[in-house]
Length: 364
Figure 1 (cartoon, helix red, strand yellow):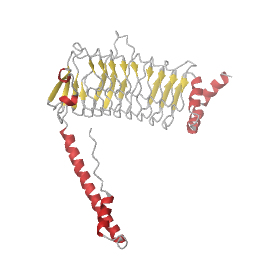
Figure 2 (cartoon, helix red, strand yellow):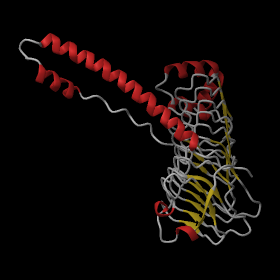
Figure 3 (cartoon, helix red, strand yellow):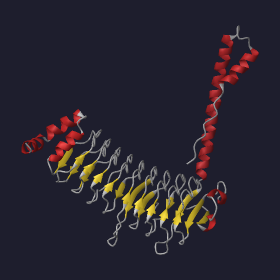
Figure 4 (cartoon, one colour):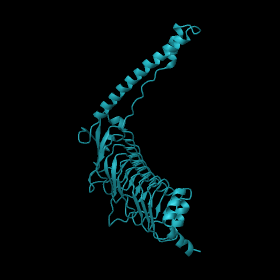
């Protein structure tokens, strides 16, 4: 499986008005030369602004050249092995300034400790061992958080059990597909949040696996290039804000055992066009699909009277034109959840008046 899957621009130093004022005060009499002083200040401000612009252009040019110097995974020259090269040391003690590198995990490695490579801007690629040789069990919290230049890693080896909180948080250049092996039991909070360049996520399933996977909140929040997700078939909860802000997300089939879609799970997924909720879903929490501006069709297949629909679940979804329900009772839950949106009520009460009234009469 392929996994082809960031420095800040320095602000130019602002000219200090008090230096200009001080210079004018020493040479001019304050009582007699206010106009001249003001004129000098204006000229000085213009010159300083021009200098600032020149400085900004220069800084931008410098940053551009720095950016061009960052190698790709195919051109990076230096390699380090974990844990051998880092035993008892911080990564800063091993990696020289400007020395971009590939990290190779030794098959004997059982875990990457918390924050071990956090903020390592020189890390370009991670190479995990082959599955049959790997003893890797855990990647702890923030182990690779804020590795802004990390671009590629091969698939996680089967046998890996846990991905910790923020383990790859803000690895904004990490590209391609993220494949989660069937051995994974826990993907912790914010694990891939702000990984802006990943395009797909696949949770692999195994017929022999009895693992119950637990996903925590914010895992893929603001993964802006994420387009498709294949969730594990045994998943029961899609957690809070799991895909919030995944603006290009088009396709997320909901597995047949999911019971709850938590608050803001798909908020601001602007490209999402259709939602098909299987019969197993009995709770769609507050604003779960709000601000999905392209969402046109929703199907709710649950036949139970226990279905719960959270406040403003479809708020700010201007393209929504069709809502199909199996159990007419669900209409009362949807309309109640959207009772602060008159345009929604007007649109759907008119369109589905027959279904709504049939249920109303039968429930009396």
